[in-house]
Length: 272
Image (tube, rainbow, N blue to C red; front, side, top):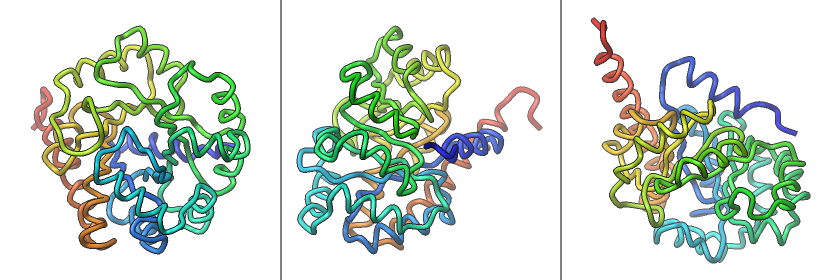
């Protein structure tokens, strides 16, 4: 069952008046030891949550960098059960949201996966290709595990559909920042409007990911949303420079988010 860590972390973020930083890492890339080390160092580097990606052979929502990291991890023997074992052995300083495609979960068994993910220490689940209402039986099986099921919304999602997504979401709503796959690319011009639409139908935090490729865009997104998800840039740093380089990027992003919120407070009416 959910132990409330995800909700508690979001409360702390909001009370501190900061934007949550959520780095993504592919489990088992470049190896298991590196994943454990990043999970262990993420909190000290400034991460509030971590998305731990389950590698899958056909990650259609991901760009070439994360696709390559998934294929690398699979070639090295990573499995969904291996992801849960890795998570169970990792430090618990930062709440971890497991991010997976549906196929590995169905092969594992949705109800068993949800229970085992909770036992392994996951704080939430995000299933990339499980649309709200598309598979009620699987949704119910995952909900039975008690972990918050985070939901995805797109910049083109109409307001009525956003309301349905928000009603089904737990933990937070993940708003995709651009059309297409993860990685570099222009953020959607409609992001501000979509965040405003979500604010009208839910009190859940809104985190934006896809297309946040560095400090400048993280700073921009932090002015719109409650949280910022950075995946491709973190995975790329890990590939090129190892855990130390990836954690240095997390520190850079933390500073950018804090600068954005400080600038926003300074611009408020009545600010000194």
